Length: 85
Figure (cartoon, rainbow, N blue to C red):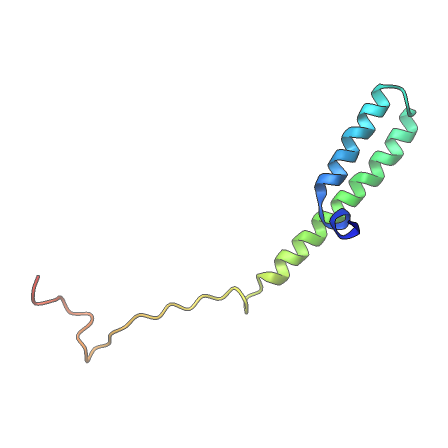
């Protein structure tokens, strides 16, 4: 559960919606809303930064390299047109 809360922006977004509803229902003050909203947005930014860092680590030049090999060479006449054409 704690891991999900740290890595899932859905919960933070749900809390932002709930917070907005509580403000509209006058359950919290404008200043309390602003304070909590700032905290939630800070958590959301931190989560996005962690996700970007993890993505960057997963796609380094070493792990994201692509090697394409083709068969044939001059001896096998790979580059010359097929006589059947």
